[in-house]
Length: 193
Image 1 (cartoon, rainbow, N blue to C red):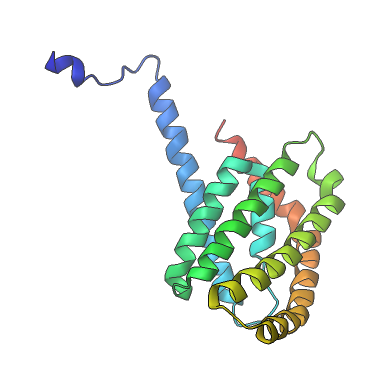
Image 2: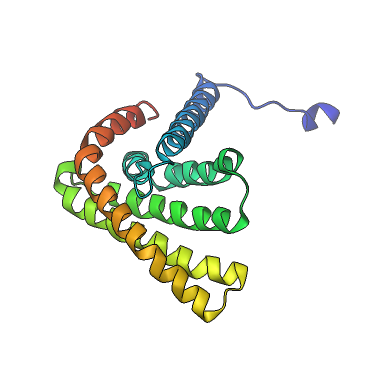
């Protein structure tokens, strides 16, 4: 009876080994992507409104799909707290926003259309999501810190120039970097199948 409880799954024709190898490869792709994304955010963190994290997530999720995109988004949101410091409101903001961005862009990638045919829609989606990020921050931060109405209004107004710069940056980076990044990520995602 003890032997029955300690059964090890049988490997027939390498199916289990192949499944484990695919899982390890998938984890490695996500880990490298998250490390690269954190490094990219750190490198550009000194320039207000300039970022490439959005185009990286848009391209990765488009090529790798919703599940892998959201896994990368969650890992990124948690691990970036080590580099930039732990702020609960930022953690919640990133967990909600980047998982939603990965889900939306992963769903876009499911269509039969190629990246070039989806580029205008992808640019608009990324820009709308960036505006949504700022609006979500304008909602969460005042609630978290219990801002007064005047402070909430001032916080909202002060976020608008930053949001405009960031949205313009996202539009430009997605327009120029989405297709080459999508090509690289699509080639990498095919090795998982």
